[in-house]
Image (cartoon, rainbow, N blue to C red; front, top):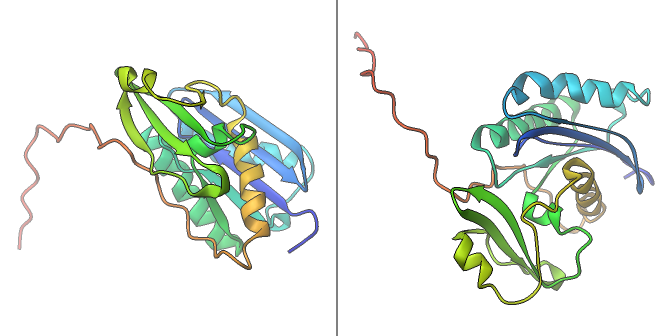
Length: 205
């Protein structure tokens, strides 16, 4: 692995389209655009803009970091699918990072990391020293208020792509000892999409 690997990280799990380019310990380019919808059309142009701003080509990258949620279902799928496709075409690893972990990147452990899940609920995860963390869960605002111990969130993540890039770099450095799995969406809440009202089309033999 290079001494200062180039890692392109991005995230569309919330109402934004964010990207950051990490070289060694430094974020050398970053861009975040707040948006409720349209991430699918905006993500690749945004990544191109971040790379071209510092004259970096796709083939120069050593790894990708991607936000896997929890958060917006469609947004998570956009980023994870993009990361998998780019990793396959470029022949580099893609490293999935949860929003809950990214939010607590500089926070002493143990700590509860909380993210707004809307409808008076929050996503929460108890992060312990050493990485032996509890699984993320969905809890009511009342349950979250009753949690004991330190907490961070639900709106503390101001630089999602930068935090994802830094965590991805740490995992890349340990890749020889701990294999990197392909990124997969982190869904904590069940999908709330309603089934179509129209009947399915008849498939003729």
